[in-house]
Amino acid sequence: MGAIFSRGVANRRYSMTLLGAFAAGALLLSLVGIYGVMAYAVAEHTRELGIRVALGARGADIYRLIVGQGMTLALVGVAIGLAASLAMTRLLAGMLYGVTPTDPVTFASVSLLLVAAALAACFFPARRATRVDPMVALRSE
Image (cartoon, rainbow, N blue to C red; front, side, top):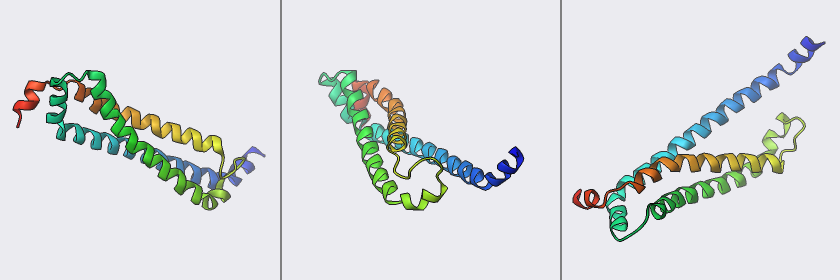
């Protein structure tokens, strides 16, 4: 009986595995994208960050500035993604089992996962920005 049941759900299992793999790829691409944008922003604003540090900004202030910019981008993206996913729930309704298409727990957990991933992607550029030496930054241009 187990083999018959396994064959019966094989197509759905394959579809969900494929969908999960694409979701993991999308998460990885979003991490790389946010990291790239934030690293570029830090590199472009090195002089500005050096001036801020020279005028007395603490490392925590610089860290908060960079992470704040990244999280603003991430939260806007999550809001747009939530709106788009709510609009597309009818397409996935046939693939779901035991979960409604607009399950609030799923939407909340995925949103929190994306925000946490964005925070992790912003960490390294923000850490590099806190180590900007004002003399080197001001001499570079």
